[in-house]
Image 1 (tube, rainbow, N blue to C red):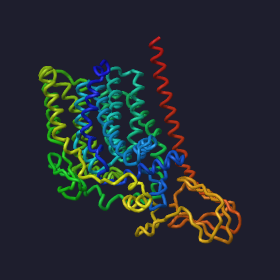
Image 2: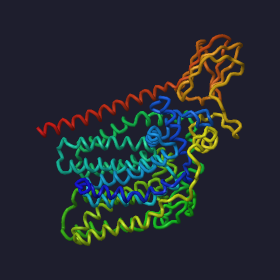
Image 3: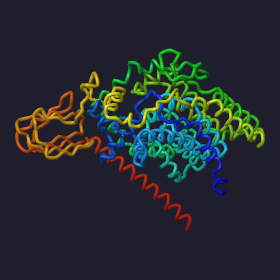
Image 4: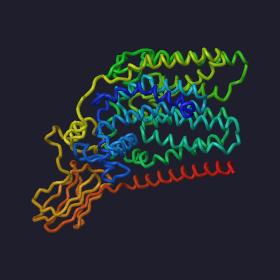
Length: 571
């Protein structure tokens, strides 16, 4: 009973979040734009089971030639999904479980964030607004973007670290405290990066002006700005195992094919009236204002934005007081709420054309993730301030009404268009992965690589000989093939693995393998032969792994330092 009394609001957030995940309990799966999630979770688990860590390569995608998807595609949700498979779930159920986890974490982390800044009841309201934000439903049941769902979940922790550090330095400009929030900021930034690289890029665009404003509001406190830069740097170190190779090795693949064409940002700006209302649908984004998917913010959320401003100015005028520390957090949030909306429209096209690499974001409406974040902060602030204006009883009534209206109006959005009743084996079938799934996403193949035109051209074996040989032993897993065989005559060994730096092919003849548009070819002389084909990683990948280890050590040292300070204070 004491536990329930202490954590009633968090328990309520968890209960109310069930409405967003109920469809995941339905048998089968549902159609989504990114219709490769189950297969990617399965392939991640297969690579981990083969002892590959950190996972960069998967064996079956890429038409059976494999490709380095997790060298470029943010891997965290798939690591977590793989853990559910290790616990005994099949790939289908594990994928649904990871969807549910990402959704629930968004509410929990928003609650923790706002409770720390504004209090318990504001935390409850902000969590519900954040959970039931319409674009959140789009990401889950229309787009099915696991990476973006997890990045959305971790964003509140980033701003918890940002704003708590600001509040500490605003109160005590020369303080040496705040290490706890610095660590939270660093870890959460890393989690966003390895959840969804494009969200982390957009986060950087948001944080640069935000941090500069906080620097000014703190009377240009250099210690504050140094804390921020240290935290962001450590966050980058923690994510280096993924982020550095993703940046530096991109040119080895065809990933740039995703830029422009049907995914040109200039074709996907949101029209202003779509924020107020646009028809709900399960189609795609188009060049016009008649999209197949909705970009509405929700009328209640728009009302909250303007009501919260009115409440703040009413209190300031009534009491003739200066802005408080928390008022700055609110004002920044409401300003960046509108900036997030503007960044989704053509009114920001000059920014999109000016800032390098913005084309990688592809869809300006991705900034709606940040609109959901900032309007949730504004809702928490409004709840905090209204109690002083209207009294406790009416305040609780209004808070209850906001919860009821938010869930009542948006619950229907958290449903898929239909269901597929195919079993897990359908998605993990080798032929399905090598053909159907590979056709959907093959941008991580080498630029000049052979792409089968039909299912009969799919490679069935990872290696083949053009002459008869006697196989003595074979070791064949994701990152390593070891062959011991007798060649009766000169032969060619065809290695059906997409060429990518990091693969090393060695033979007892010291023969160099030739790279082709279908993998590698090794000339073999008659006799007893040993050939080893192994993914050893590149220098960039190995260096990046070491930087991540350094980042982990820094965080561990920081945690030990915090614990020692607590012990010394206790004694």
